[in-house]
Every structure is written in structure tokens, then in C-alpha cells.
Picture: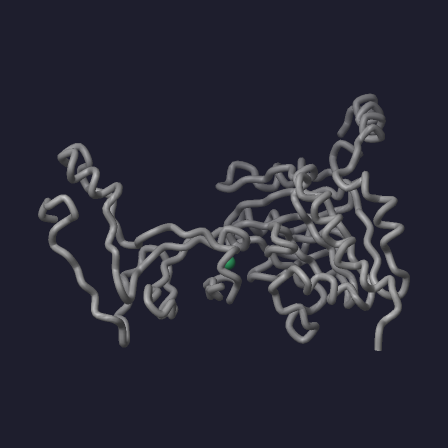
Length: 211
Length: 109
Ligand SMILES: [Zn+2]
């Protein structure tokens, strides 16, 4: 954004934002079990929905910042901390840090809209559509397995894979970012429900294991 | 719970899918030429097959794509999954299909 005054004003407005799961931050901290499973919200990540034929010229232009668009279910393409998740054969979700948003001086989604140009497809700013819950630790998989029917065994669900599925009975995107770290994208209106569901599923790991 | 093999995502729980009813019901070429009864039959009358039934499904929680599926309505055995627009594949052993030439209200199809 060229207009510095507008950018300053925009940054001021951003400080007034409340993230969808913010009311649970204290509960997340209290419910996290160090060395077993921990939960936190990563608020305000920049997200953009992309619908385009990945094989066409526009698809190639839109894939530039992530090393191409993912080609099949589960695939994630990324460069640095900007990633494109496969949602469908012609539908992708671009995820980037909060400060990549053009209202904070970044260039997403404006640059994507420019990249699409007049070609068939769409770029939509979805940054407020979902929030991000990050579940990590050696028992994170056990927590997820209580409410997700996918095969989450590391042999099948490898780090760097993202799938759109159901967790705790609600639709969400599950992205395994590292061997013991999962990013979960529920829609904003499901954030509190899923946060509480995860806290409940984590609770057993706070007590000592009964042999 | 059915485990439905999505052509894009692989096997997923039935709850991730949206049912789209009977497949291969073509939109009338000239809807304006249809009588009210014919139009009503196009809109509302569907086969009530015992055995292999071709139906449409959408993977609503996953890739959001539509596809056709051949499912046995007695055994729930999923016999085939094929793209929209493709003809119904030949089936193996299925329960006999009874097609009534007469709709419940007596109009000949
Ligand atoms: Zn699918």
C-alpha cells in the first residue's frame, strides 16, 4: 500500500482486533501439558482462497510465491513461510504470516489478484474466515485421533501434508507442519467449540499414566 | 458408517459427503414442451431400485467435487466410482432390478 497514512491507520485498527479463540487463550495455557501436548492459537494468519486451473498460465503465475500450486490431495507447496494447500483440483488455500496482509504493508491478497489478472478464476481474501489452532507434542496425534477418522499414523500422514476433513465432528483443515506439530484451521465460528473440544481431549494427559 | 472412496481424496467417512440423489437423470431438452405431469416426473420421480443404484455424491468436507457412484442398496457394497458425465459402468453380480413402467399414479413413463 503506497499510502503511508492509510497504512498507519490500518495498523492502528488492527490492534483492536479480537481473534476467534482469544477468549480461550488462558484455558489453552492452563490445559497445555508440557512434554505431552500443548495448544495455542496462532491468530490472524493471512489466508487467500484461490480458484484457478493450476495447469494454465494464471495458475502458474499464482503458484510463483509457493513454488507452484499443489497437484494432489494432501500436497502443500511452500517457499519460506508462505504455503499453498490443496483443497480441490482447482481450489487452493494460500497461508502466510499475518504481516503478509496488504493492510499491514504486505502484498497478499492484492498481488494474487494482480497475478490472476483477467484470467478465469478467483482470489478471495479469507484471512478472517478461519483461525489457526496449533496442537503440538508427542501426544498431539493421540488427541486428534479421538475425533478424526483419518489415518494419522506417521507412516501415512507425513509432515508437510494437509487435508480437509472432520475433527470433533466439525469441518476443518488439518496440516501437519512438523513431526509432532499440527495446525488446525476451523472456521471462525467453530473456533471456540473446537478449542474446548481439544482441551477436553487433552485433559487425560495432565494426570499420571495408570500402568 | 460407509467408507466412500472419493476419486480425489481416497476413502473417507460417509459424513464428509453430501448425497445428490439418482444419477443420469437428464435435464429435458425442451422443458417448455413438457406437460405438467412430465415436468413433475422429471423433478420428483426417481427409481426405487433394489440392487445396484447409480447415484451422485459430493465430497463436501473435502475436495468439494461431485462424482457418480454405483452402490448396492441392499448390501451397501460400493461397486464403482466414476466421473460426472460418464456413462454408468456395467455391473457384476447385483440383485435383480425391477423397473416399473408405470409410475405410482398410473402414468405410463
Ligand atoms: Zn474428495
